[in-house]
Length: 246
Image (cartoon, rainbow, N blue to C red):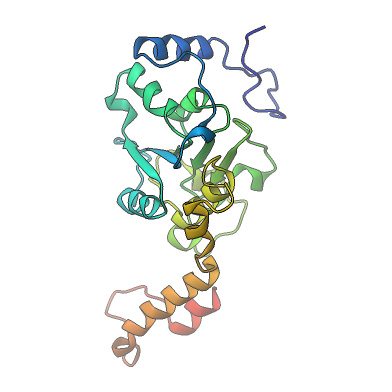
């Protein structure tokens, strides 16, 4: 009684648990004056997204844009470097979140300090996820793995890739469009019918069309070079080959 449920239902090591972690969370909350048992995040008016930004490795290369786009979509956003914070402060900030967003690693264990209905989004450096290799990954009822956008990291690759493409040594390009859509679907506040976030995200163009327009716009800027080829030493693709990959 009182033990946490298995962290990964269906995982090959099905007996894996985070025994004792709930007690650590309750003790840390008490030290900073937070109720030992949290209610649900759905009681808040706006989505509260905490973005975990590592400073040493697995950094979010476009973290500034992540914060900007999430705020523009009507969310309260906090960007933190957990390694710079004491344990109590780490648990306090996570406990005040309806979505926890960060790269796979030990810091995401703090997902167990979230309100029971909150969402965990784990990012990957590669363009594929564990599910693509037939391995389930479930940390909590509301969870999602979001890989880096293929066009940014491995445009000619296929899934599933070798594990090296999800290396912990690599930094991460956040697929902001995918993150917005996951939050809109699974965050307990953003997913409410008629919420500001839902209205903004639902108005976004389909990602494939957006990527095509961005590529065409970029290629148009290269028109002067197309007549004589790209600059010396450039590996820029031709208009024909680049468009064929979409």
